[in-house]
Figure (cartoon, rainbow, N blue to C red):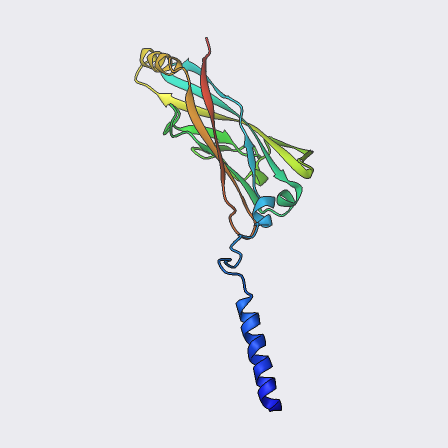
Length: 198
């Protein structure tokens, strides 16, 4: 009889406990916040960009003066092997035109620019605070010298006139951080204007 009471109590408790669970509530599916990716995220600030055009003999010279700012947390800046900045000229008149840039040693690079800002001297770095987070502002200012050769001086002048007739074009920047892995890239577009030099 004692055993029956015990079995009865255990059975009743089992049914009470099993009937008390909530119905229709799924386990938590909230995703975790990737603080590592947030620390290594880059914000781009690109004002309108300008290209100065001129003709020398049979060559149309277009000097693009890059002027871009990036912000990144101090931790992301400190713990990064490379902070990349990539220019996308594919929707502009500069696309597929040969160009030269200068590296930090003053050497000329043909159709190449170093996108790892750790290796670029044409930049400044400033400490700031953004939304309460200690951060760095990296300002990159460097020239790209594009040259397009024509058969004659007159053809080069006509090429300049056709480019300067363009009201505005859009170019894009992409930036990402590498530190033991590649973090998601940030992109931003901006207007590109051509200014004719007399």
